[in-house]
Image (cartoon, rainbow over the protein chains, first blue to last red):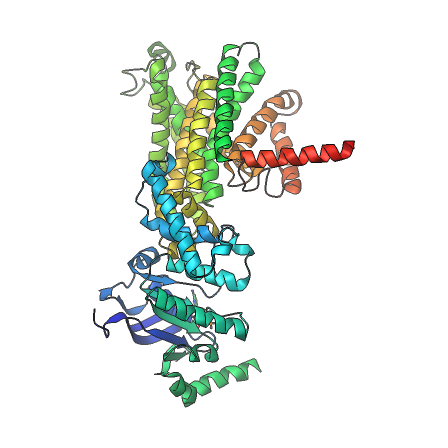
Length: 261
Length: 348
Ligand SMILES: Nc1ncnc2c1ncn2[C@@H]1O[C@H](COP(=O)(O)OP(=O)(O)OP(=O)(O)O)[C@@H](O)[C@H]1O
Ligand SMILES: [Mg+2]
């Protein structure tokens, strides 16, 4: 695979909900190893784009090409198995389960033993289970969460929950990681730390990262390339510097400021 | 600790086996108690399966009575002696192949398993369309309808069921060895399932289906798995019940049966297997003890008493007796230690 090959290619994606066009004719290419940001005001359609990639919403029009393969319309559980993992804007952990168990869920699809073997349990299942737990702990250590492995996920502070959610996504062994507003609800310092963390896991796990952010400042420091959408339409793309000075972007965000005021 | 736990479990099972052996031997001296324990084990068995789909996986099924009906009738058709088959199916002849053979006592286990398997096949027929639907309540509607359809079929398929008159003279093979034995085996399976990787997937589905699917879990297949397991337990329970009572009619497995089971799993704590077992026996004990209420006061009064009891439990133990926890030796040990300390403090 050459450096410039595309890992993800979104081709004229359109998503309509009844009369509402949430995303219109959205196209974008992402190369292997890139760290790309997607920003836009509230309701711009950012999450909807993620949902079309992961198979949660089948796009009304357009194609999603992942690693050269058309994955449009595949159900989410198949998309993950191909190598696209995600986190959610409003953290979606299994709150009653421990941090480790949350990570182990992601290993389950790769379990080889049948359900009968698991019930017995067969020696092979026992080996597989032990191996899964080891790997789960390794992964939690790699993201600095080993202390929290046996804590109920719902009882962890918000920032740690976000990290568990990212660890759980990493456990699916993704090539592409989609993060939907990972810093939402964090103060500026926490957001900075999280961005450092994302950079760290990207290098450790050799990932391509596609990141949604609402607050412009947060992505500016970490993403070399940023795409902006507003009302479902792509309005700009470029380096943080270019984006900051783009009149259309300023207008979109000013519009939002005006609405808030 | 795990080593001593294992020894404790072994001793417990040994004690249970001895008790069952002794209880079956002296069943004529403790008729009431023996009956309560058998019913308790059967209710508990169906409830264990039911809590796997309703409690652990979080999919609201209203189907167990239908699966019990299937298991009950199939076991009956396998085990009813030939002469009895001739007497019962007097007007409409019994259908092939059941008019050709009957199984001896040694085939009882096969008949029970066959009842379970028939229930599993039926669970596929209902579950494949209902669990594929995106909306959760489809399963409740589909299973409820399924139970009603089976009832009507059981009333009208004279050649297999002898209709509303039912079947009498079923050999009463069920004793504590069978009922408690089946309960022990399937409870072990349920506990193992819950604690395995498959069980984690089921619990993840209950907590956040979308998240589970986003981690690569094939949600549909896992729901179906839980549903099939619950159907198997119900099918076997139905077979045991028919061969405990010795009579079977379509009315034995109407919706009230599912309602009982629902009370049991809620009482035990939704999703707790130990809770389902304990509550199954409690239910049977109270149910049999209150039999006089129905005969002496007003028929149906028992259910009113039960509803009140259930409300009380919900008021004082929000999440049932066990919550979602399971019984463990450690839990018992810590409880005992705490009680001991408390008693010690009181005395001194
Ligand atoms: N399932 C749905 N049904 C109907 N409308 C939807 C659905 N999902 C999203 N929308 C609408 O599509 C538009 C875009 O929503 P989306 O969640 O993608 O925005 P967003 O850019 O992620 O915003 P935010 O910053 O608030 O997260 C909104 O108007 C939203 O109400
Ligand atoms: Mg969003």
